[in-house]
Image (cartoon, rainbow, N blue to C red; front, side, top):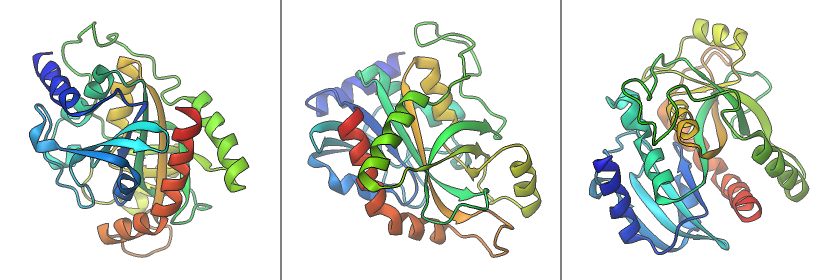
Length: 271
């Protein structure tokens, strides 16, 4: 709690108002930060309790400012368990976001497409998650001031918020986003074709190495959460071609303009 208080104080000393929403930007999706006006950058290395983001395509800074008429706090880059951080460390910024006074959180990520109808560049609302990392950020002593020992995960992402947003997106962009279940693995190696066939059978539509621990902590502390995956590649074995991080970043860059327009619309109309 002492570290949390220090983190919150440091960020609040830098920003001017409590943001309407926080947004975590996944691999290749950091260009949304260039849309922010009256920008204040806060490097992670300067924030008590934060760690260094080492994943490619992750800038490692908070970005505060105006996105349209709304105040936003962007996490340009996140932490991952494959970098050597514990699940609690990965999800620590979520606790800071809530303690600052922010009530809504948009999680985004780059994901491999398991559902064969997906194509690279598709944006997909996350309806539910599968934690295949077999790790949980709530392991250990529970702080009842933060949330219950056994938080309910029956609606881990806000169906109401997602449905409202998709109606707005369909009206403005003439086509709603797809919806799907996101499965998270530990990483950092990509999955085998046999694993992808198994994940498809248990109900996963897309796969990545992030997001789930953030969703768990967001539910623990009572944040309203939305998730959006950018399908940057098809998962192993779907197209019988090798996978690479460069492909993920390139696909994120290709869709960045549409991604930014959709997120800006969601923020403007629902936050």
